[in-house]
Length: 270
Length: 308
View 1: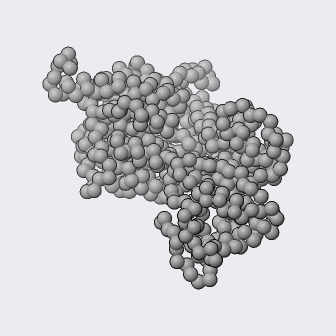
View 2: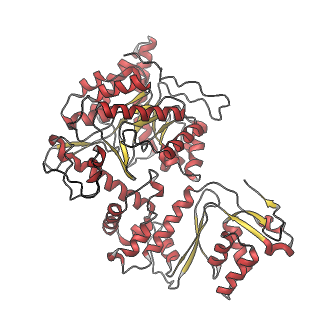
View 3: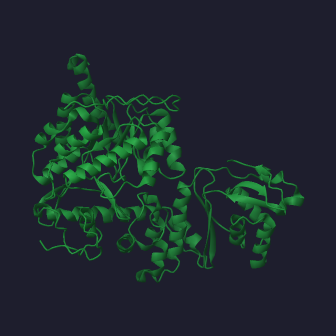
């Protein structure tokens, strides 16, 4: 058996020697293994690569459906070798997958694919996020209308906003289920809110200006500032519609007054 | 070798239990898979316990915890760690160990187990149960890691014998000698995976009966049964893969019956992790194990088989 030179690492420990070739198929079998069982090193290589491909396939089912099984497995395998998991919590794995897809040459003809993957990654983030309450219409109704512009909101731990230059939400929605995918009419860029108001994760297409409105609120700015920012970017921004959407999706958990000095909480689920 | 702790009767939990007392002695359980949740909740009550992989319940919230809480309200639970990397060269990840301890505290499982294996090295997580040579040095390290886990969870850990595909020239102990030494030094218990024993023996060409007769049964607090598959390696030799994707094979059932006839009705889990059948399929496997456990319990109680 050829002496293993561990070109990828200067870790000469037992585990370093054993691990060096696990994600590097061209490396020799580590010489710490008895020759009689050396051919079985391939079992570990295969178990690891296949299990990580399956982990990515489970996190990114729409992405996989779009490109097909063989394409997805090849893409995932390339990513796994370049960027193996760093955490034993596999539901955190794949946070760099969308950025990888953006640079993966065979996917260059599908420039929206990475954004679909970003939505799917946010979906799993929302799935595991902490439990928290959601604001109701009554919570807003209790606010003195004269002070509505002063309120600041705490986002639900599951809530994320994503913006795409492509119709990524329509493509995600069409491919995240088993039914056949028809022609996707949308051509414009789309923004998504991903959150989990109760047991189930939801992905919503945001109306014009909705993404900047929610992002500004999530940054801790008050409602007047957020509405102003949204209106400045989209003159068709509809505050009533966006407020209704914010309540209906449960994207925020608590409400308080951010200014001038009154921070008395109207609602606290903590 | 007598064991200082009777791992078969979980030590009394502290005051103020939030969940029903976890009774698993003499019971057969199955792996819990979220796909089966509705069938479990809506179907006939299951008489056994459920085992979960700890790492799947280490998120902050959401459906995994909602399901596990509801499951635990009715059933005893076994928490099975797969990523602590007890056989690893580096120190245990303190953050991960803390998460493990929180889970044990939160769900009050009847059984807590991990593997004689490693899965992380440096900063990479390999998502597999990797083998280690059995040396004086690795023995000391594994024992340190088990001490750390048992200190963190405040209770006995059951350590599972691995399924392995390769062997190391550096090994100074047989696997059963190594496990005995770990038990003697740490006071941990063992999880005897009969399928792993079968798979490893076949892959390395030793006699599984000898392995099992050397196994320190008095320390065993849980038994695992699972399916495996035969493949052919690069040299054309047969290799058994611990695949957990099919029913328990007859040869493994036979070994299991022999073990519990000797050691008594040790809580037994049917592991099934991929190519999942409907819940009824899993429950049928558990029922087969339960029949064997019941027959052993009756023997011990002095009731003849055919009186049941």
